[in-house]
Length: 230
Image (cartoon, rainbow, N blue to C red; front, top):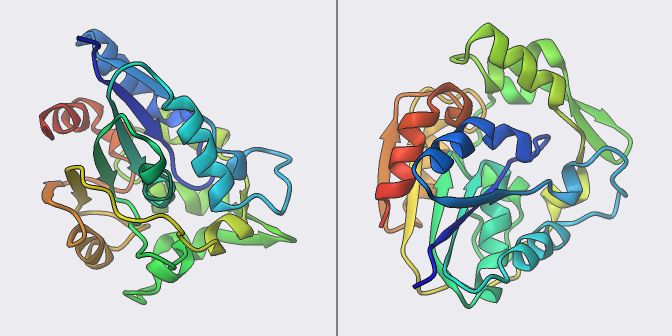
């Protein structure tokens, strides 16, 4: 029997790098995993890089012989939701402080379901057809419970995000696989009240007492949740 592969999908402004510590934990447990860089979050991304482009990358990576688990963080939740119905070997979905748009809804519209201003809103800067994050404010919004060293490293790796990706509506249908939601109770980017709305669209919910980026602040605890969400 072929082992399950965990496909780790980052959020806006991020990259595969953000899963570094969770990846180490998965490797230590002999679990197969891979992480990718979404096209919409890549330096030099074309303005017309949409949610569908990100989902396509996930679908291509998921063309494996064995089962896969999609793990989406933040905006990455919208990406795995869009990709899910095109992955026949999908075993389950795991959302980490993530957006779970309804059919026809964009990530931006999902965020507005609970219109609460967060520290992430204060960090966002518009640059033409892209969004950037103010580095100093990004630490408070995304990495407030990380060590200073990890927070500085993460901020140094942040990229841009195409506005088009956040405004693209979900076009995929629901899939008949189990779904888990990892709620982050100290989140300053995706408000916990909004996470409750998103989590209601999933089968099971677990809570971490963490900020928005538990993959960097609590990688062991997050890894254990990923592996028990069966």
